[in-house]
Image 1 (spheres, rainbow, N blue to C red):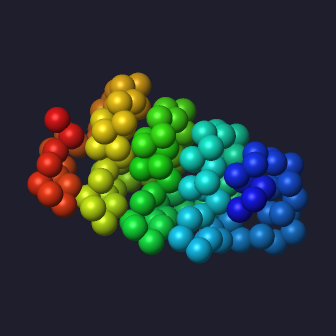
Image 2: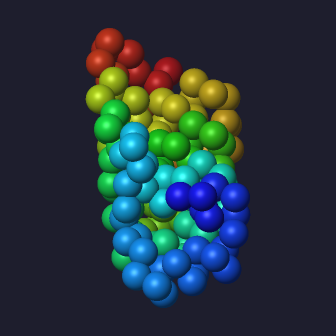
Length: 132
């Protein structure tokens, strides 16, 4: 996952050409798409999606790339993942959804994006809390 974390797009391309698995996982279950979502690199996210990356893959805690992008505040990545069919209300093991993550970290632009895409304001987390 080093090439993704350090934004080495040309290296990522060559590794994929060389047969690297687009949905490979690291020790915590993160995929390259998750690392790209964390970095906010829309170009790398698009590359992985075009290579067939699983948009709703989860890590060991049930976190998806969409939750990661919402948590960090990468609105453009959120929009791209959603346009490729990411489940807007997919929840982590704690019941954290992308909308809840964006609300918690104060990313108003991501909240607006998720709401415009149809994210539910009524989903509850493991403690019964809702985004409001």
